[in-house]
Length: 524
Ligand code: PHE
Image 1 (cartoon, rainbow, N blue to C red):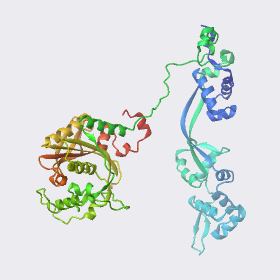
Image 2: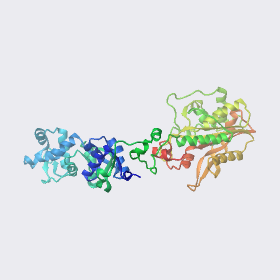
Image 3: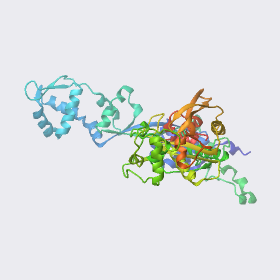
Image 4: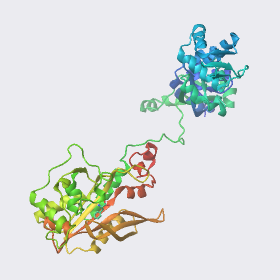
């Protein structure tokens, strides 16, 4: 080992930086140092300071700081005093004890050049500071001295801190005085800027070291080339080699990735595909006919109201399917048609069914599919699912969104039963990672029997409701030729609840307005 190898190594051009820091003898703000040395900030930090730090001759600390800059107007008042101070000084100079506001405004304009607006700003602060009071007791509004001494106001105390500087850090102002900063900001006398302050300082070794104790090099060799090895040049250059610390952690790299919601949606798709289902899609802008009427939802059902459903303004209505189908739905609602039901027994209106709306559930889409295939008389069983956006007129908060996503599915098959339905739903959640699933009796206008579906969250130690399910009533399926012994099992589950459990979020909005810091770290 050559004796040189124990000496710290430094590029020649960085020596003045070390020497300057030795001269300064105290921590210095990096930008100030860069100004002093006439050296670019980036170059200073990533070159000289970085090398000095590597050689343990210097260190730097970082902190966030808020800087308060004086505006042009602010600078003027630091010199001459705030308008209220200037006006008060004039007031005393003239030896007034009281004077009419209008009269005084004129003399302020003449003597100080303040316009009306500035005069009144000044006056209001003189009053706030309790230097003067105004009264209309004598008829016209008059100013009276209240405190001859006119003690320094908090705003003045802040401006005083500036001294000859145009910028000061927030931390140089005491906490109680900071309360008054909004006033100065509002008066546009100062502006705020958030910056990262880097303080550079030499280590004890850095302060002590002399140039002859440093292995000064012209240029650093970043990498040994094959030529250098062949020629043996590497041996002579060994002291010029850039030193590496193999233990230092590399910078974090955040690779591009899918949003967790996309991943969960794809997982849902994969699970259904693995269970033999095919994905279907349908329109977001839907006819009330498919969203409600075909699902045997009476036309006075509360869910149809404007406060639950978004209706379209332009165009207000859409085209209903063939008249015979519309008539079938009408008779089912009015008297049950050929379903064996008595119907809802009211006058059904095709005008209401024609309305266009934003789909409130993806059951509208499974129903559209059911209507299509029912008429085609296909091979059974059929298993399809739909995972897509739905809309409800809800006030957005930590548990509600106006735009959400649902997972609907149907199984059309001969003699399929409620047990099949429970089995399929349970299997779906199992494959999604939820071991315990429970179904309880529920109610939907379109299913009989109906069940609510809940899963158990080990984390929360609670059952959470996920959605609804059931067997479509004859009032729903007969219209499309689907009759006993063929039955339709159906469900509609929320995607967000499931995603919140998987992603451990307790605010539903996080899923869609996700913080970038969370997205970077989330292991999904
Ligand atoms: N559409 C119902 C909802 O939005 C869920 C559901 C779908 C219930 C299918 C039964 C059958 O909550």
